[in-house]
Each structure stands twice: as C-alpha cells, then as structure tokens.
Image (cartoon, rainbow, N blue to C red; front, side, top):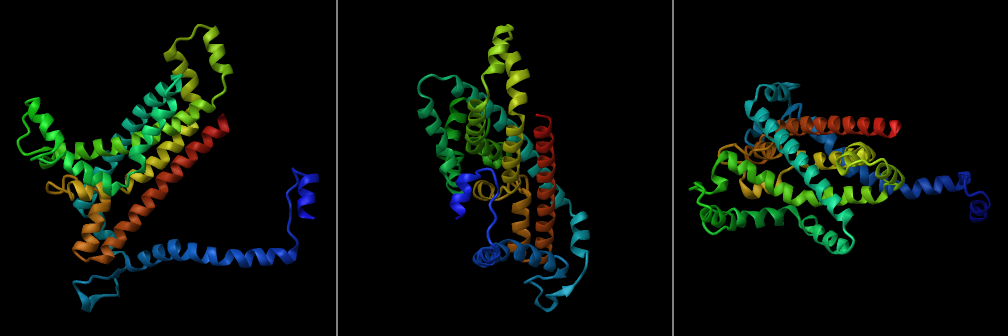
Length: 308
C-alpha cells in the first residue's frame, strides 16, 4: 500500500499509520539512547565536575562544590591564554595556506585532460593516514640526527645547530607545515568537486566577453564556490582547533610551552597534574568556543545560500 502511494504520488510526503509510528519510535529508541550516552552524558558530567574540586592529588577535597572558582582561575591563567593564542595562530595560518594551495591544486586538476584520476588518487594518501602515523613519520623527518629535513638544512648550509624541533619558532612552523601536508588534499578535493559541478554558461559568456583567466576566477569562480569554501573552512577549522596528536608526538608542547596548544594544555592539566576539575573547565570553554565558531560559519553559509 505504501509503495503504491509512493508510485502514484511521488511528491507527496508519506505518513505512516499511527500504529506503525509507535513501532518505529520503539526501534529507534536504542540508537537514541546510545547517542545520548556517548555525547550528552560526558558533556553534562564534565560540566558538573567543572564546578567542583575534583583532583586525584587531593583526595580529601574531591567532590566539594566550588562554584565558578575553576573558571575564575582560567581567566587569570596566562598559560591558558598562551595556548589559545597558539591554536588560533595555528588554525588561521594553517587553514589559510591549505585553502590557497587546495584551490591552486583544484584549478590545475580541473584543467587536466588526462591523468586527473591518477593525481586525484595520489591526493588521498595523506588523508588516509591517521594523525598518529603522520606524527611519527614527521618525527623521523625532523629528527636532528638522521632526519631528511636536517640533511637538507645542512646541505643548504642554513644555521640550525639543534634541529628544527629545538627552536620555538621553527618547531611551531614544523607543526603548521605538517598540518598543511596532511589537510591540503582535503581542501583540493572538496574544491575540485565544486569546480566540476559549476555550470558552464557563465564561463562561456565570460570567454565571449573577453575576460581574462584572473577576472574569471575573481568574479565568477570564487563567488560561485563561496558556500563550498565556507563549508570546507568550517570543517577544517573545527579539526584544527582540536589539534593534539601531531603536537604530542612531534614536540609534546615544547620547547618549553612554545607549541603547547589548548588541547595539549588541557591534557597536561587533567592527566599530568590530575586537576580534573580545572581540566573539565578548560574543556567546557573549548567546547563553547568551538560551538560559537561553528555557529558563525553556519550563519555565514546561510547568508551565502540565501543570496545565491
């Protein structure tokens, strides 16, 4: 009966009988409970202990209600703001370069007549590797004694006596470079898919009007790709803000705290100093920042779609 209605009225929204709605809700209930258990419960639990004194180094004071003390401590913690500044620079610089390189690669691949599938397949290699594997791989590349990068530095006679990971500025640059290597293919593939989905009529009209390649890119291609670019930046920024694996394996936050991004700082507070309440407060603040950034990008995307 339902199949016959779908064939006769393909645009009409099918409604299940009342008796079947209860069955469907009952079948969906286990999945809903699992989702709530693995998402909502940890957030609520972290929010609860962020208002308490929960430290494994002070067992006698564990569980006492302290209100906003952890958040007030956070606002006066210079190490926290240093970590936020590092992840902000890491995200802005990394995502910007990845977007620019990804757009360039996508334009080149879109113009290829032969070999596009081969080069597209090669772009998948960094994406299929896990962050742990990439961190270990670049740990060998940047090794001061036998790494490939150190060999090239010595061959070019560039003064870097202790290796790239031993200096604050170069260690942070190495982290950004590693992230660019990993995620530029993602930007390229997303933008390539967008380029291949664009209609051909505007480009034909621009060609007839004598527009140059730069004018076509500036006034036709980029405006039409703007919603897709916003989505790519949203997903990439959300991942960059949570950066932990590669930093932990390459520098562990060093030298000093020059590369201690906010996730690694939270890890050190919660699982090295065992100050779980302060770590939970840090996590809640990071969660809120991520939600605000995501909401901002979604608002921008909605405005782009509305004006398209």
